[in-house]
Image (cartoon, rainbow, N blue to C red; front, side, top):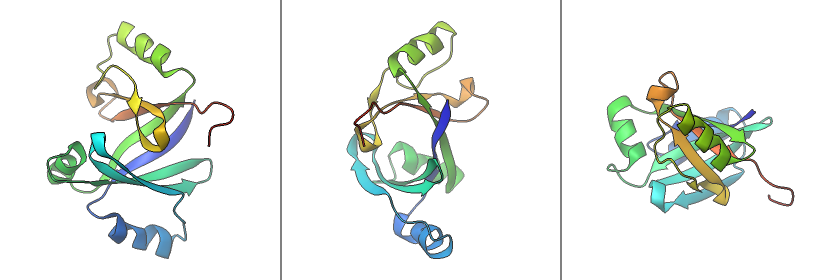
Length: 136
């Protein structure tokens, strides 16, 4: 299992890019809007992993509320798994609390699901299904 990305909640992607691009010299690997999650996402490469900047589309989205409560910063850690449905079934059988309990489309069209922080030591954990051969 590897870390696919670290999610960071930001008020403004453009303002945040001043640090990542201007100071660290990291170039964007992709940008997209994920309507059903209420965010604009920018992916920044970090060796074999990535940083995912999450800007809320409005204050009443999950990320918007997160920023209002806790401020900008670490939002989640995302781990890559071979079979997301199988992993979710395993986690449910162990009694872990899941946010949705089923896979949905996330950034880059990949299947994702979230483990509630109460079941993961206070950290929001995202799981993403491993890319199959031929996927970007």
